[in-house]
Length: 289
Image (cartoon, rainbow, N blue to C red; front, side):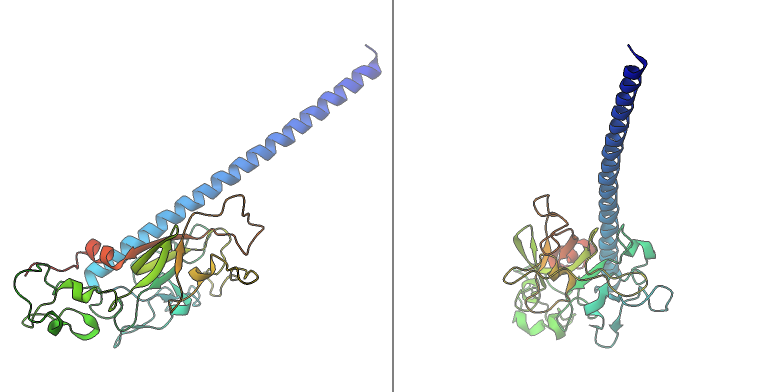
């Protein structure tokens, strides 16, 4: 073989090796990216669960849920991470900017954030008949025994905000207190299934972070609004509770709706508890009198 042909063969082999090396590097980078994304989702789920448990513990000790903290208050300021609540009325004063109140819950700052370093949004059923008023998540004065003693009449014992009146007043059936008309809770769809009487919702706004509040105060850009009549599936999760707002929990968008379609893409990570599940977990349900 001539020297020229040898040099050409070496050049081809070198080029092939370089291409193989580049392809391998791309595959490794992609695998690392996928693994990192999976790790971030796992960390975020763990933090959401920690906040959920802290909410239950708070109800056990206080008989109510906390109000959201103000997401626009920067780290380092005195009220950062503390619930924004009017003590006299139980009214929440930062619902539109609501994030998990990590200080009030006794958590570390990082535990109130997702794995992307953004604050966890917190939606809670509040108001006069809500769960943030004093005793709003405490119905131990209700009677779990529907037969005895006879309640005469059941409605007579319903106190302010439809709470069960304490003895020696006539006790109240829990069905009276938890009637969906009296306590509708927050509406939510869980993978397309309508869930009623939700007590609270916790939201990580995912890798895209659209609508998330930042540790330094301020907010990331809101979800893109598509042309009517379409709606962005992430938009409700950025809103405060109000008429017509239905929160959403669903699987992240697959490859058919990529991140390059921001008006349709969904990557929020959501957990919630119904009012009944919350009361049961906290041990603040009705008892047999």
